[in-house]
Image (cartoon, rainbow, N blue to C red; front, side, top):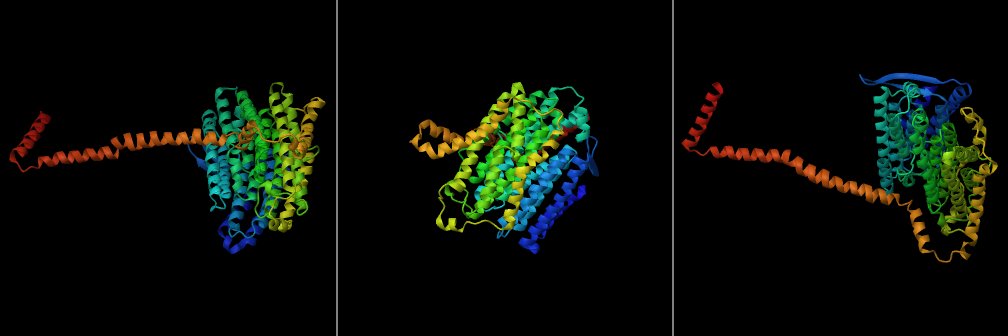
Length: 611
């Protein structure tokens, strides 16, 4: 049962990819979706056996790397963390596959698309179920490759090409951190097996070596989970089809970084400096993404920045050593984020691929079911009481406040919760409730999709409402500490900010014309700063990438390649041989005394050598 989960996924991907022409559009969709449904059913059984029956499973399949320094088995590990991740990944991926069969209908390359989706899911399952860092790295690189292929699926679009290359290059920075961390672990502990390494690290004293390993692991997580500094690829990844965005943001790719932090928690518990770094970066990521999301006008980019912000909350939870709560929020986030992205796909599908929310409006009458789905997803994202997001996001803020020296994470997170409410209500209002700005022919044709567009939305909506309540007790059973005890005002502050943000949005949109006649100079600068995502793209492109390119061209290419190496290498050797040949050819003059001179020199050298 355990190995069949992976087997079915890779079989579906290979058959749909290789035999796509014979299967056709419907055949590829039915095959890959069926494989995912069966894998999901087995994931439910794994969840029951591991979580509810307390039965952890380790499987060693074969030894595939054997040397004097390192022996690596291809093995699978199914503990509580893996069981929850498996259920999340297969559930969301199954619903995305079903949604894609209708959303991508008519595309001539849908078998290739479904194959990529299944391969993406397979490699994510490889990543989460691995029992060593080498196998985890294979899944890590695999999901990066699949994200490139899916973002660049419409490969004739220049923007899609740029976004895919950017995602690949930015993630290489994080990948380098993970590789260096693996070398550090191997050098310090002599193994890359989770069980061996973690047993040794928990009995070792905190040291600079472990701190450095943790910081390098965190660099890997920053790249994959789009945290501050390496977050710029995530909004651009919206160039891919909407089901790809849902899968990347909800269940695969970006959650891999948070999973790495949770899996490597024994290391981080021995490195207080690394934990403080994790908290600072996570808190600033929450703030950055929330502020930028307020001014975005692209429907998918608003949701993308909300993903970046929610990932920041998960990272903060890891930084305060509450890894189970981080996993809890990851699971809750998967449902309402997949719901928001697939609902956005339904809106885009209804409006003939329009994504600018300023060109929408009035859709509540034409696609009321999608409107309800977006409202449920947005309320859960805002942390509205008793919805799924409420149980984990507010809990993270309370736990951050409980750490007296980390209240800045609480206040930044609370302020970001207010901004989350602002852009969520703004999105709902401009898309569904305001007067329409769509072109009349497009607006008249807008309608709800077929059953395979609607069914995944309904199931995800149920998850966005009930999953948090149903799973909270299971999550707390993993915690060593009891739930935090904080004062009532602190407990109510995030909810109050959400409600206050709703009121603020209403006031701004209906009465702002009476207060803001002409944008001020500082207002324009602030808007430009936020809309450009704090100028990170400018800084990275012009102060890092461009300078590195110029430096590489001047130093590496002109000075080394075409300079020193050319003189002492091919060109220098060639010139030397030419001059040597020219000198030797001068001896062939036809004059007897030249030949006699050479003979005398040769005889003298022979006599000197003998004597």
